Image (cartoon, rainbow, N blue to C red; front, side, top):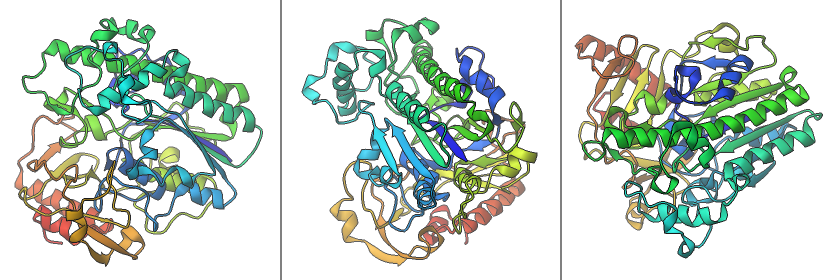
Length: 490
């Protein structure tokens, strides 16, 4: 058995032709639709990047207990477990967060790995070398990550220098060497189409984009309000679509490789992402601080499973990122981890069988959201002063460590199911991504309001969905302080 997972970062389903977009130029995603099962009700769980990747290792929700951080010493890791059971695992990626404080324990869980430099704010080229003339658009970010991006671009001269192109080339090189070998898992993980939406002009011409120096392609995360005109939002979306078309071309290279070696008969292919991105929808640009509307959390997902003959079909059962772990473990004949939140996708692929009564998703310190296949209930803190905690043995943020103020109030607690019942340290989360944004509760009927524009106010339905939320939180063994924060009884 072999498996390839081609993962993108920030792949928004509403811009893919597979989900109804009629203006993006993406022939290989259309081609993928015939080679795999398309999931219509697939969701992220923990936002954003590294919390989602922790779910891809553990099969457990991350956001209920901590924010951005490394794998923990008590975590089960899917690729590491595969390796221990004779399945060779390899990671090819340009996702620079794997080499920062808040993600530094992930890549070592693979049998081998290779990384490519230069994406976004990757601290690579000395910042003094930044060529500020490469992009003069006044709408773009002006922070240190933007300066770093312009420094990195001085090393990205040709298209083949682009980190995502190098990443896919490395993945194809692995397949070239091992296509006739058995028992391996390959993860090809591209940071694109994450912002900045930097892409060669040949893709930008597909969408009649402006001169590259004037490109609005590195937006700040913010409410739109009256900061941007409709024309500026339209220009931003064009830049995103241009980068999507590059991603589509890289997907085509992987599909060509599957065709070349006829891997379809015995190799699983997963194409997925961690989350989407607001490009003006719901009055937001970004992904972390707004409510988790569908544009961000309802993700594209495709799987070719050689055990079943259902390629070209679609599935409607509700599934999410945590389900990928038990699916891969069972595919390789490895015993699944105990107490996972995820479920094997095989019954969905085979019969569109329901595997979840409801699912959870959210960002640490923000709303906790429950979805049952029709209604989504977004439950927020009862007030902005409710405490939020990080429960961890790895006191690091995305970059840097927890503050001394957080460390001095730490205490040892039982981690429950989350930590396999081992003790963890509970720190007050002074810098949680969601803790500064106290959004009001909201209930949406997605069957009749798919764009989530008209909240439902029916008290009985809210009571019903609150009960579903409590059931899902109990199943995930959410800590007591989460119930207190939401103002609901455990």
